[in-house]
Image 1 (cartoon, chains in turn orange, blue, green, yellow):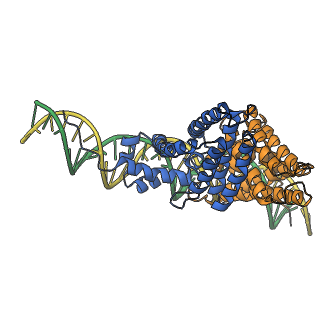
Image 2 (tube, rainbow over the protein chains, first blue to last red):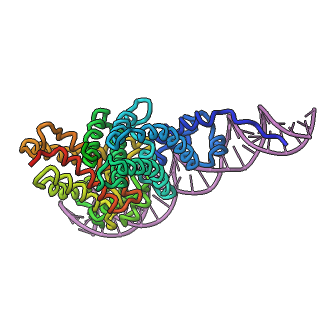
Length: 200
Length: 200
DNA sequence: AGAGATATGTAGTGTTCGCTACAGATGTGA
DNA sequence: TCACATCTGTAGCGAACACTACATATCTCT
């Protein structure tokens, strides 16, 4: 039996375009018409490949987090907890104001509140953010074990904190804050992590 | 000439209901049908009173910020910058997880990203958040002048920082974080402000 | 070459959206 | 009481939404 007509578009390149539309307009604000136009395909191709709109979002999120994880691995490779926080937040200040992408973070812009029928989208995004937070928590736990962080410090709380600041910065970026403003926030935020660092 | 038939519903009570719907579903996620049902009126009454959906949102935002400003005045009345930050962020941890309201903050949940035709909604929310940030900045500037904050501290950066943390906490709350988690974030966050406080 | 399988483009489907025309109801002023 | 102004409920407007039926095109396998 035959294998059928092959797909004429590059799925990953199309996903990159879809990712940008979701990033800029959010899940509910992005329309199928906008998505198909950006992806350079017609609706039937979209549905054959990704199932439905939510399936397309999940595929875009997968691609986004995959690219982001490469960077996160560099972040947690920093020698101290303070430098981890600094690399993470300063990097976010730059990335979220990179003119090559929509401002902010897809994991925030994607949809914080949604209407009936899409209630699980915000939780889908939260689950992806939780992965990053877990990575930070593990790294901070190691820092505590190594004596880099105070014995009284709470790695989970620190990770939650850094994650919260990152989200706040994303919202600021999407509503017009410039790179310098975000860097100032990151600079202040790092001081809380420094306060949990052991004296040297 | 006559004054016409008087309105049969309480506009402020109706606004409270609309506020809750926008808070829970966001601007675009909230439908006129949901809003009118929650408000206990029919569409023509809504449009006669508030103009259109965006006018209703602005009226709801006005009411939200009016209530919130009462609390903000208590926050900035704290004696030191550190205590201002602590009152603000700890208070937010409690308010954003108050079961009497939808989780999170209307100024975030209302709409971070919107579709074509509602692009100005995110900026409308950002403008209201900026008012709070300005209030914090003025308070921190006073703290610096009083010697409560270090001479090298940047009141504007500190205010932006506290505001960013508050936004991040709002997103966390709306996606399921409980009160204890938010308090941990607030606790860590305050330490950055403490690091900018003058020794005593 | 022919049969089966999958992709594509056109052109829609039914539903829901924000919003409103209209008629009747209820008030004020002369 | 009557003219006028405003509100209210019913009912439905055009537009946009996510999604798909269908005919056609392009592949693989025999």
